[in-house]
Structures are given as C-alpha cells and as structure tokens.
Image 1: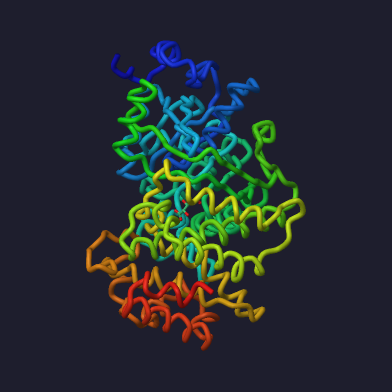
Image 2: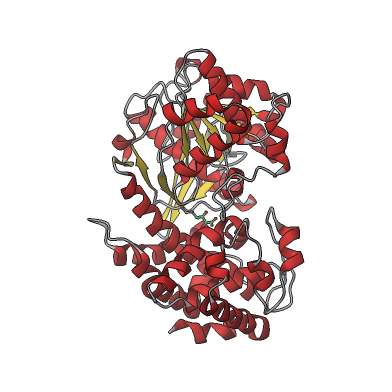
Length: 497
Ligand code: CS2
C-alpha cells in the first residue's frame, strides 16, 4: 500500500495502518486559542517548542497556547506551502542507534507568511489572545553587534523598518508595531521568548527591541522595558536539515507522505527563566526546567554553548575542510574524536561554573554519544552556515576567559582557525564547497590563507581585547599557517594532546 498524505482527515487511517505512530488526538483549529506566535518556523522550532506544546495539548488539556507560525523571509514560502497543504500537521521522526519512532505533531495551529500579508502578522501579535511571541530567527536575525553590544542601526533592513511608513521586514519592525498597538488597546506587552542559541538571548532581545523602538518612540520603549518580559533560555536538540531521502524513508517505513518532516535525536532540553508578563503554559509538566534565577540559566547556557556548539564548530569547519559530509563520519575519525574530547576537557571545562546536580563529565560523555549518532545524518554545511554569528559566541569568549585564567587555549585557536580557513570555500583536497554567511563578501575581502589579521580586524565580530592579545594572535596565526600548509588532518595530531 502507498503512503497516505498527512492531513487531519487522514490521521485515523495513518494510525490504523501503523499503531506505533503517535498522532494528536486533541482539538485544533477554531476550537483552541493561539496564545503563541512563533517567528521562524524551521526544523528546530518544530522539533523543540512546538513539540513541548503538542505534549501539553495532548496530555495536559492545554487549549489556549496553540502556535501560530510566522515566516518573514521569502524562503519561508516553502514552509507555508508544506504546512498549509497538511493542516499544519507534520511528523517528527526520532532516530537513534536502536531505531526510529514517528510522532505526528499538532501544536502548530496556523501559519502566516508575512510577504503575503504583513498587516495580518502585526494584527496577530497584537491580538489579546496572544501572550507570547517566540523567536528562532538565528543569530543574524538579532542585528546584534558583538563588539559594542548594540543594535546594528546602520543595517539597511533596520533602516527600512525605522521608517514606520514602511510595512516591516525585520522581526523588530513587527514587534514594534504590534507592541504599539497593544499599548493603544490597553493590553499588556506579550512576552518575547527567544529560542535562539545565544548567551543571554532574552537580554539581547530586550536590548535590541528597546533600542530599535527608542529611535522611533522613546515612551513606547520605556513601556516595553518596564512592563515587557524577555526570559533567557538554553535550548537544545540537534535537528538536521530535512533531506529528500528522509521523506522517502518516512513514507516507506511509516506510510506517511509528509511534505516537510523532521528527523531529530531523541534528546531534548530546555532551561528557561520564569519571567513571563502575560501568562505562560505549564511547561514544567512536560519536562522543561523552569528556573527562578537568571544566573542559573546563564550557567546552563554557558555549558551548552561552549561544550556542544563549541565542539560542533571544530567538527563542522574541520570536518568540511577534511572532506567529510556528516557529523557522525567526522566522529568516526579517532583524531577528531580525541580532539573534541580534549578541547572540552582541557580548555572549555575549567571556564565553566559549577551547576548543582549537573555532572559536567557525564554531560561531555553524552555529547560524544549524541555527535556519534549515525542515523540522524547531521550535515556539516548546516552547522558551518552563519559562522559570523557562531564563532564569536561559541569559541571567542572561551578563549578570552582561558587567557584570563592562564589556561590552555591552543585547541580553541585551532578551531577558530578552521573557520577562518573555511571562508575560502576550498577543502584540503582542493574541492570547492559553498560558504553560507550573511557577511560573506566582507569576509572574503579580508580573509588571507595563513594570516588571521584581516578577519580579526572586523570590529563587529572580534573585540579589541583578543585582537590586542599577543599570545592569542600568535597562537591562531600558527594554527592557520598549519592548516594552510598541511591541511586539517595532518595538523590535528599536533593539537590533540
Ligand atoms: C549547531 C546547532 O548550527 C549550529 O551551530 O551547533 O544548531 C546545534 O545543533 C543545536 O544548538 C543543538 O541544540
């Protein structure tokens, strides 16, 4: 029998054909309220927040926090078409060495594609039923200058949105208009909940939004700043980009025809500060760690960003240069596996705060297992992309702190150097690959094989403290020379022990 097209009408048939598949049995559509508007519906959102909401709706009777997904970018048209063709249902396939489990998710209730109707998005955010606007807009969506910690006011998209006669194109433009409308209507601000991978994601969101709004309307900025809440959070679930083969295997193995399914790992984690100004779902009922203390979230974030994402950096940039395609393949090479372990243990761990009840060595071991999980086939280009938002977050602060406490940082410099070299788009065997980065032109103009100084001069990315540190510049120069001369695989043994 052929696979069945995923939609509400066919759910019972899908379940009957394969009873192991989890399907939503809760009410959807007009029977529920959409309390969350989520900007940036990609794989990660659909494998993370939308899964927690699905579980709350399925097992805990939640009816007033269904999700209205929003896409701001032209490339989101594909998600609009996929979700709208299947009543916003989609499949999450959890894969591990022991097999696959398929779960149809129904937490996303509707989807708005901003380029179709920008006003509809503003109206939705401003609606009294909306209590939370959540974001997965990637690091570059925040227009955050890493050096000055300020909004990139000069950015043309921000300039476009600062003229309020224009309909907005950036997240902050939409949030600004919606907040203004809520104030006019006598409502509370909604909570703005960042689910992006950034240290202090809530604080950055607050800072960027109020800076943006202050230029247009200082009193609105004050209102948002005083009444609005922006919880900080650590989010975690490795979610590869969906490959065409994933659709085929879902159809073959589970009988579901899904225009855009997700393949992910069984593991998921979310630690979030309890800081909501207009109510929230009882997230703790589905395993979310809700913490009262912002410092606690920061500690979890630090552990995750420096250990997981910091390791991903060497796996992705080093692996791409060495000619690999997937994370698990890189981890099968003992040189990389050992380097990753030693970087975590010897250079990152000592920069991290102790967290009560959190065993950092166990956490590192779990990471190695997660990276090595072959069936999720996590693609290196997914992790390589957008490095200008990643290296300054996941690697540079660890180097700066390691220097401060005179700990070792050679491996971290090697990791940073793999990114510097990656910019050229040619691997160690002379094969070309595509480099994805919003700042690519600027990077390419400044990158030189074996010489980090051009890239280090980008003030938005690298602060003066590191650029001015002789030990750092010397160490990264040597690493970059090694890579340019010998390639990653030949250089690795020098950096492992
Ligand atoms: C990856 C993350 O893109 C990246 O840099 O390291 O997407 C990673 O898979 C997630 O942070 C895991 O939670």
